[in-house]
Length: 64
Image (cartoon, rainbow, N blue to C red; front, side, top):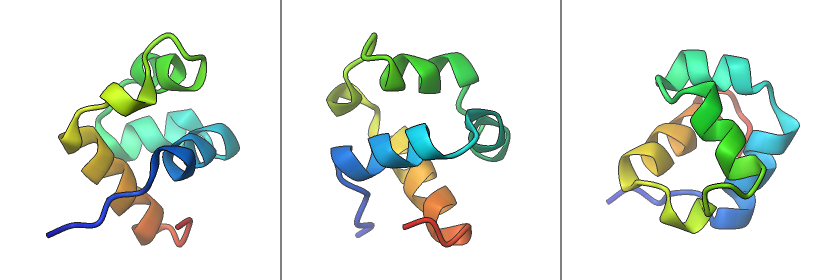
């Protein structure tokens, strides 16, 4: 079982790192990432797949 980042950790990741780089590495669109940051899409409604991708990105880049 994969332990994914919390909502707060995901938001911290997205606000303090390049969304372009995150999008490029995870195949999650920059628009989707911006929607989470800007509150257009509630980060709590993020798909589990996206949460896993972002968690893996954070771990691979020592950002967790």
